[in-house]
Length: 198
Image 1 (cartoon, rainbow, N blue to C red):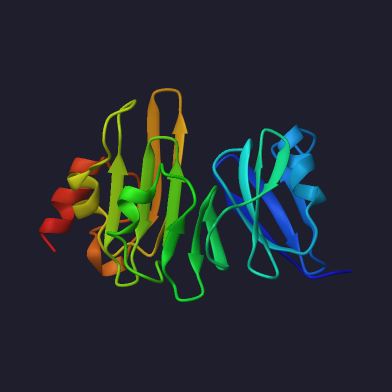
Image 2: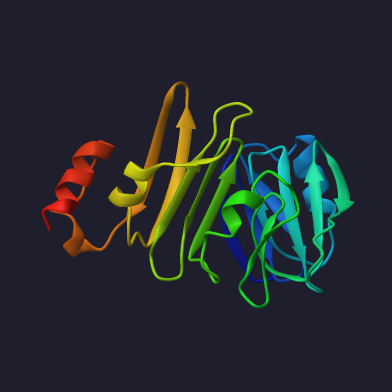
């Protein structure tokens, strides 16, 4: 039995096997994009932006983009060492790169070798190598803007997951234990205020 690792990202869950295959296991493995992902050979990882959009990293550093059930060679311009999301990756030198114009304005602000990067539709967030949090939003076709209150409240986060449903958004964040007075559910304003007192 080949060794495997679990990949959980926005909208989908997959298993990356040591034999170069990806198995989409949740929420549905029968949708067109899941089928396209599972057909890619020599895969070592993947990054998702919802179930209909994924980039698959190949052992040789090239990338296959899967969108709407169709797979195509990505025009990354560089060999990629890690995929963070759909059309968003990291070179062997640790530099963030995007082969879609959508996220390029924010990439110059994030440190090399980021701890984590998330991008979906009108949301972009990253944790830099030194712990700085980089949150950006855009409204419809407007420009990307930094969300200052999120940046301050989540500084030095170790990791995060961004969830959206209905009209609500949730962040699950791992912060250093000594940077907050308690664990649990917070509003953003209350968390920011608590962290300013520490």
